[in-house]
Length: 273
Image (cartoon, rainbow, N blue to C red):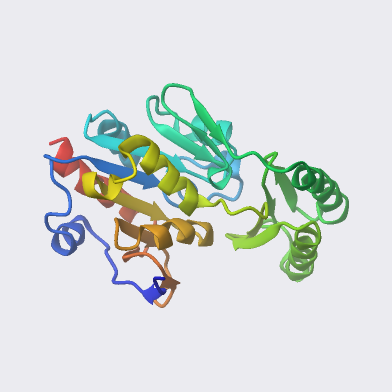
């Protein structure tokens, strides 16, 4: 079982090349698995307002077209929402932390939640809306998981509302994870971004995927740590965080979201140029 660490920092294109010489080769394929919010796009005060930086978006489109690059976006957003935000055809999308996966040919893998959990979910949404959807806070209902956003709640009320929201989620058997100015409620099933990443890699490259393909994963949040943990020793993962002492399963830390453009340039330099 890997342990969390304070990961070495990478803050420029030169750092990628210096720290990972030879990890990527134009002769062999790479699987690039990326989170969306806080990774491909800077965090916004409302999820509807997020946008990928122009340069990053252009490079992402470029590498997505390359036959040796397999691209998947694994997000906490609902599937249709993340597809709309990224808007690249021919790639794999996973929404709701991997509970919904859609492949380029339109085929899908949906994790089937037991009836009891579905019933609890409906009741949980209702109670959250009744009790804590106020003072600028709101519930993003993604049908199988939800995010309780309290970014706009006055500071004096934040802790109390956040605490109550967590208690309500836990009462209905859901896992309440801390995110950026939000609580993410995930169903109590053994499925997360890590399981989704492994499933996607096996589906694309077979059971022995780790012998066939280099893997790059990047994310900025606690839910991304599930993928970083299972990929430790099998790929290279990057945790975006300004906290120099953050404990992470990732191999490297990126100090800010803007360094993602350099990460994509590092890949593009091998495969596109």
